[in-house]
Length: 234
Image (cartoon, rainbow, N blue to C red; front, top):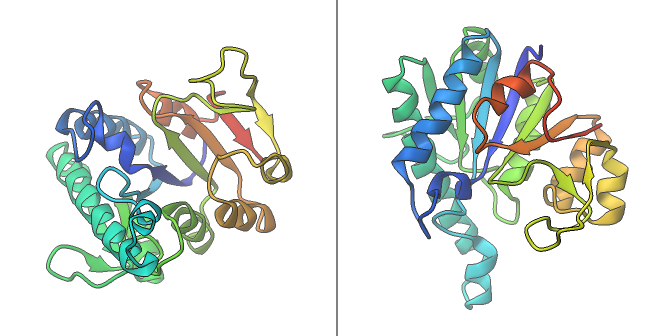
């Protein structure tokens, strides 16, 4: 069993069947999965995205400056983090939200040593605000937090896709699924597991990633226990 994990949760995972925003049913479903994982005694950090509210690249295409658009996206991650915190608290899971940009009224600032202490005390840490810098995705934030906090693995939760394929399985019936692969193959083939900056960071620092379907009940717990789910990137 892994002892300390970083879960990367996309904003799209929280919107459920809605076009935008948060679907409470989905948040509660993920919170229950996290609670079961937490009961194993594993230390859990969660990096949430904000794509269900805003995407910097899309805003840039509309004529907005990329930096400004990215900062707006960071605010979207905060809304998602607070929703997940509320759902976990209702399940009596100890949880704190740490932000890479200051927003003291609702989240504490991210400080590595404080986060390490909280994790060691089995407090679930939700990391919001991405890296705190524009031009970097929340995938990059997940990679950085995994390195800073000495996590054993990044659990890359996908919305309805059960691993890494050679092409989009939602479009092609003959898409081939990988059960295990290397970071080098991910980068060479341009597979969209995460953005290239984050993928390179994981490759250079030997951080394993498990890509799996978060929608399937129990998959978070299975991944933490080392059971075969999704695709493992080593």
